[in-house]
Length: 196
Image (cartoon, rainbow, N blue to C red):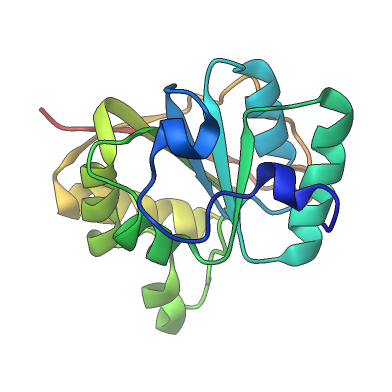
């Protein structure tokens, strides 16, 4: 963390400014809850013409991601240590993101904890505003309850067009996805675009 984080960390305050933060103007993709970073590293490696901003609260996960990125000499992988909501609410301008990735979020499987799930009406509205026209919100989960929750929330919101079943070929099958598949669970893939 001491050696690698300074090379990849975004400024601690101020609005997202691609030129100032990343040294160029390119499509910006936000990954919410990047975990140990396998998907973020894979995306950055497969899309050198994009800047990937991974947001993660768990320090060991950030450290593992940076260690995996180092031998690839990635210059388009960026890190925000912390909660995604303050970043999205206060620092990401309207229409500034090419895509948002939410892969295997905490499912909060008990009904009484459903309000803690990331996908809610207010977050769908916020993400719709932060995405550029044509931008995509990708969600993947191996929990049937969370998948049903996503379908319900998107249908109730009404501001999104949803396509199911499109798994991005650049995303590695490890971490929570591998555990879910090993346990016999099915992975639900969602690609959401703003309704016209």
